[in-house]
Image 1 (tube, one colour):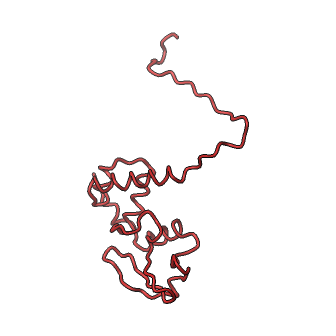
Image 2 (cartoon, rainbow, N blue to C red; image 1 turned 30 degrees about the vertical axis):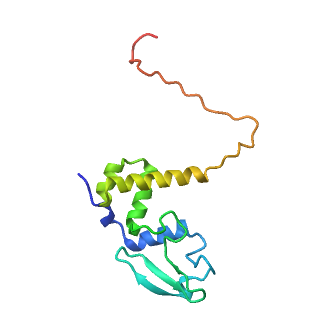
Image 3 (cartoon, rainbow, N blue to C red; image 1 turned 135 degrees about the vertical axis):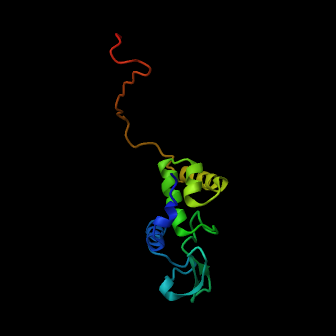
Amino acid sequence: MIFPIAELLSHHESVAWIETHFHPQGLQCPDCAATPQQARQFRVYQRGVVDYRCQHCDRVYNLYTGTIFEGSRLDTRQVVLLLRGVCKGEPSAALAVELSLSRRTVHQWRKKLQANAYRMLSHTSLPDEETETDEMFQNAGEKRGMPR
């Protein structure tokens, strides 16, 4: 059974989560660092994202400005659940049905998110000269009770 999971998540909780994780210093104008309290609401999209116009530099910005989702038409619940699904490794087809998106759209977002993660991956070596690893023994294909 497929649940329309996006409808079960609150828009306000999604906005708070995105702001906490994408804008750790708080949402602010990318040009002059003015907060939304120092700006005015310019427009509210049908998807629930609010555009602010900075009163200092006249720049328009929103919750997605400066993120990988800048310019997207996803609503905040879809963004949170898409990130969750990609991080959990859920199939694109299942995510597409749950989020009411096309499979192709989910696949394109998955590729963008993975490319962004690889770009941010550290390429420096570990500082230790020695690295310990745990050993794992797997008896693939062997049945219990059979002599070795």
